[in-house]
Length: 65
Image (cartoon, rainbow, N blue to C red; front, side, top):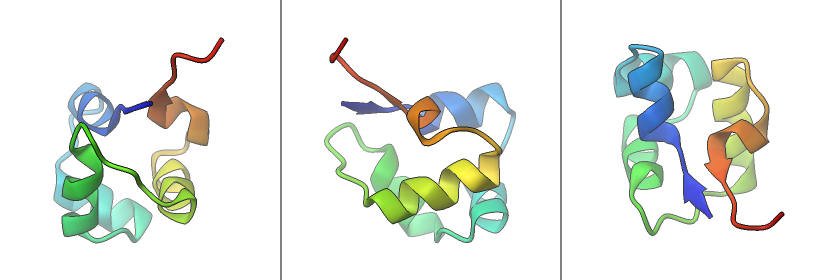
């Protein structure tokens, strides 16, 4: 599963700081979750999705079909 935070931040022209303010997730946690081998908590994904006004499933890419 690949987390798409970097792509979403870029496409929406946001900074990590802005996303942190929007979601209530710390900048350090966002940076950690942007790493390729990250394993974010579901609660963090939920907060990010709420802040970005999207679905949790929009935050990651899965190989499962």
